[in-house]
Length: 250
Ligand SMILES: Nc1ncnc2c1ncn2[C@@H]1O[C@H](COP(=O)(O)OP(=O)(O)OP(=O)(O)O)[C@@H](O)[C@H]1O
Image (cartoon, rainbow, N blue to C red; front, side, top):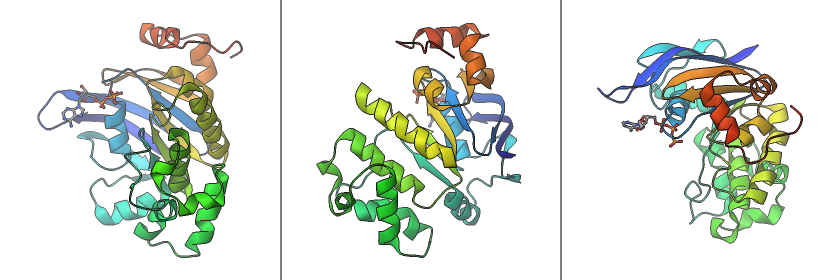
């Protein structure tokens, strides 16, 4: 069943040129879909539309069969219970003055979700592989990879149906990146994910489907194995060529 459906979406900032043109793809429930493309291809813009921060000028986005009502605060409050995001820079997204417990439970308060928040925080922090005493500490006491785990715990604490990740491992060094990719793989087993990255290697490791963007257009979309085996578009071939080590089996 389709959870998210993007239909013929076009978008420009103000009166500027089109940065997204006729974008269509769907995200089946339970799947991981990767959006890849070089800098400036429109990935972050598309993610803003998926978060409801902006509305497309043409086309529409359906979430669970209903149109996503961007900028409708009441709608977005309900939407945020079902959709959470993880961003690139774990440091700037974690308030340095707050303890981890307060940071991780923030979605529960802002979404007015009841229950035992401390218990829920313990569970979320354990599910990203961190100790319970993490909750009493501050962001500066952690490494980049640990901070990204904390950001992931915050994203999953409200048990969203969909997680949108924007370059969520790009700022991490290689070995940490591999561990956080493994973590995403684990949590994505019970969730639907849209994973935005300029790194085809990361997306290929995590996603069962890939949508390739080039200057606001979709140039290729399909099953990951298929795209890795027979990339159709010269642009996809060049993205694949930029992966330092290709998987041997696809
Ligand atoms: N606020 C804005 N106002 C005007 N133009 C913008 C704005 N944000 C992005 N753009 C333009 O829209 C196009 C797509 O940018 P976008 O950030 O979506 O690409 P991206 O693929 O996410 O790139 P990156 O990987 O560098 O973040 C670019 O040409 C960019 O200059």
